[in-house]
Length: 171
Image 1 (cartoon, one colour):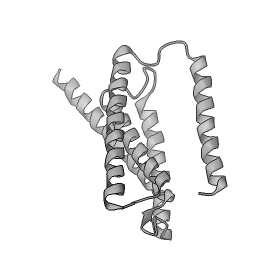
Image 2 (image 1 turned 90 degrees about the horizontal axis):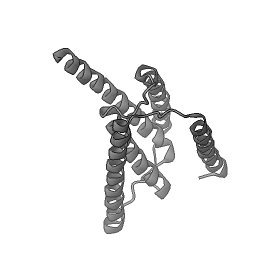
Image 3 (image 1 turned 30 degrees about the vertical axis):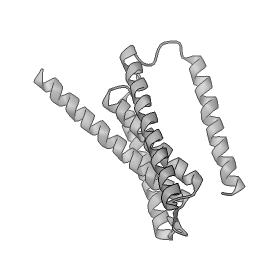
């Protein structure tokens, strides 16, 4: 990993942290009701359990069979993306992802744009032949994983909307 890439990652993390702190200071009304807060806590617990299981399985595979499927940093990114996806999907399914005043349709458009951009970047990585190097998954493959995450998020949002419409029609 080169220094420019590492610097960019750190700058991105720092920018998100600063944005979060500033936004938190401006908010006075609660963003989520009690039910949503509890559902988010349950989703976080599930995501942590999934991450723990994935880390144990990954560590066992690396040690027992001396098999690496990616470099250590990329393995960590993949495992975190999977656990993060579990968290987001669980929150969406339990109506705890979007705050009280947020519009899911607007976020759906943003998620669709992220899917398209990351899928396009992932296809470019495949066409360039940079997906795997020396038998290990490379970091540019993360775009495909992010695209898969957004695709699963959009599918879950659509299924949830369909389920809610069906339940509303039955009443």
